[in-house]
Amino acid sequence: MIRQFGVIDVLFLVSAIRWTVLLTLAAFGGGALIGLLIAVMRVSNVFALRALAICFIQFVQGTPLLVILFVFFFGLPIFGLPVLPWIAATAAFSIYAGAFLGEIWRGALQTIPRTQWEAGSSLGLSFVEQLRWIIIPQAVRIAIPPTVGFLVQLIKNTSLAATIGFVELTREGQMTTASTFQPFTVYITVAFFYFLMCFPLSQWSRTLERKLHVAA
Amino acid sequence: MSLLEISNVTKKYGEVTVLDDVSITVEAGEIIAIIGRSGSGKSTLLRCINGLERVQAGSIVVDGVRVNDPQTDLRKLRQHVGIVFQSYNLFPHYSVARNITLAPTVVKGMPEEKAREIAIDVLRRVGLEDKVDAYPNQLSGGQQQRVAIARSLAMQPKLMLFDEITSALDPELTGEVLKVLEDMARSGMTMALVTHEMGFARRFAARVLFMHQGKVWEEGRASEVLANPRTPEMKTFLSAVLH
Image (cartoon, rainbow over all chains, first blue to last red; front, top):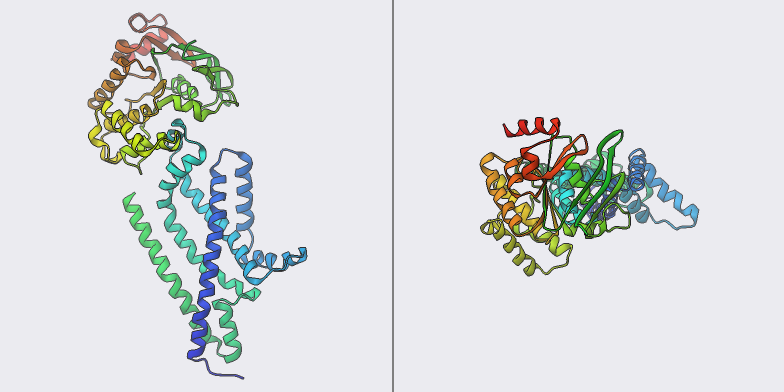
């Protein structure tokens, strides 16, 4: 039953956008938790924690995202864990985002001069209190533009989840192509939708960079 | 017992010995001035007293608590030992009031209003009560340094350490900071100052320590040591800073 690419297909694509958005948000949430932990480990005084964080970052950044995705999707069932596409996708993207956000945020934390830490510890604040009250509030403004920039990467990369059968925007495009045989029209439409999501974000990232840079 | 007892302290950065068998005692209410060339170890010594730097040998005891002991809670100790740095190190993202109330509220769990009262009180002591809601970048260097002193005072320390606190200031601004130090001296605060202000040392310090090559080279009553240096090293140093 081959049919023409029509309004109904566009609506299907539009409704698939929410899965792309949800996957992005879930991965960003998970990645933020992991990333914060990694960034803090990287600036801690404990050698073992720093080394562990570096290993994690190097391993994830040195591995294709698609492979990480496959490891979760095909690997975990071997250990008897039933893995659904959305669980595998969320886990894989969280780990990927965690490594990159961890590195971005470590950089931001390290731009705060050593003397700010010293002033805090001299007043009796603990490591965590120094982070919470002195270092992070100052590092946030530096971290925001690259974080928003990374969000754009994350949105685009969620398209890889199509390979494990997670029906987001790209997978919906594949299915539409299968029933209409109009891949060019379909993928142009899909590309346009990704662009609609990413373009405002990257513009916002630039604006933030300019604004926060000038104010600093 | 003395408030501060430093015995046979040695500190090394790798192969370089920064502090070489240093022993000092400071009684409660006493003011000592530590002078010497840059690189003589005087700032390092100060930083060892509140545990910002570790020592390899010897012991540092503040008010009966040994600083260089892994069992010691440095956070507790630091509540009793204030330090003021050359570069002020105020928190740029907080108002003057918040700079001062941060440690009392976070570390001591003091209610916000009580901490603010203390902030206003210590700001009055440094003559800046009208700047309570200003931000550090709106203040002059001298004012920032006075806020840094107030921030330390708010923790009600038993011992105050000053690390060349006027060295980054223009000459016309050092006066206002020294005046604050004089008021503190009169109020009986125990202080250890690393300083190049010989006039201040002569007038207010009970004792002067001259450090050279990581050692306490010369030590004694301020008026005597500064007027009659015994060692050639100190003579050279004094003639360099006094002219």
